[in-house]
Length: 313
Image (cartoon, rainbow, N blue to C red; front, side, top):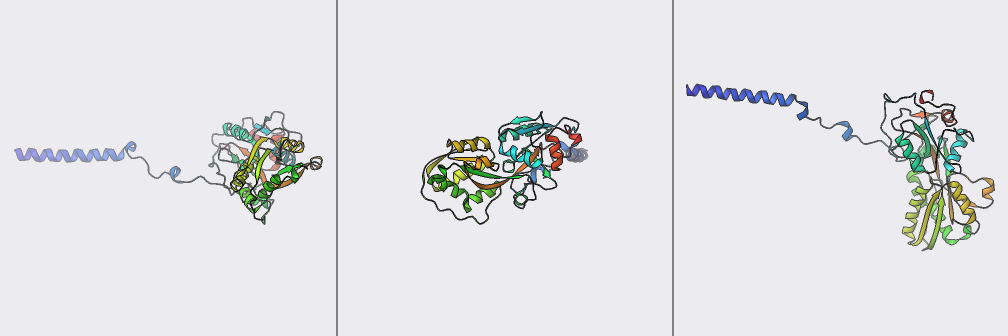
């Protein structure tokens, strides 16, 4: 009798354990999925090395919403190049919000799902999404071969007095050297594939450089590399826009002005300029926007206010 009771109890315990294992296996809360694609796949980058936003389906994008247009201020080299190439000209949309800094443009587009604007290709990041223009995406290759049409020079300029200053000329020589052009190629596009090697001259002194906020990140990188080879030099860099850089180079407030547009004929009369890189102007939208590209004509209709809703673009 005692042996039979023990045998029945043992069978009961085995059955209970089996049922418990079955319940645990079927409970999704105790068996989290492993190796999910989101944790193992890296974000793609474009050919300039900038990280691209993940593709969006646009299922929740309300295309009937009004387009929020952001533009740079008058005097901006980026604006000058953009309105000239797209044909917007002086007909900028009256409702467009004017922004004076590249980083603020990026922030506005990042925060507004229905925004559109434009920035230097060298300033792109995964905070925003760049559009292809006429079927061509901005990259070092498409800017250099001319197939990406929204492009302009990045340059520095000096007045007659600074054009003969030894320190000014040495820093410009570095910008145009093979070492300087390699720095340009990290986020922008070289202007000289056969640039000469730079030879440090042990320079000393202080330079004031200012102007275009599109050129500013490149100038910061050039400054850092130049000072490593010339530790006796200090270089102060400020923004303010291309217009300010050009006018203050003329007056001598700056030793070197920065511009993200070509000099006009009247400006060339007072300045010597040097192209240090090529740059594209990227048309940008929020990563949630399903748009992937536009024609130049479509861009023009948005920035002149002819088209005001995404459903019409």
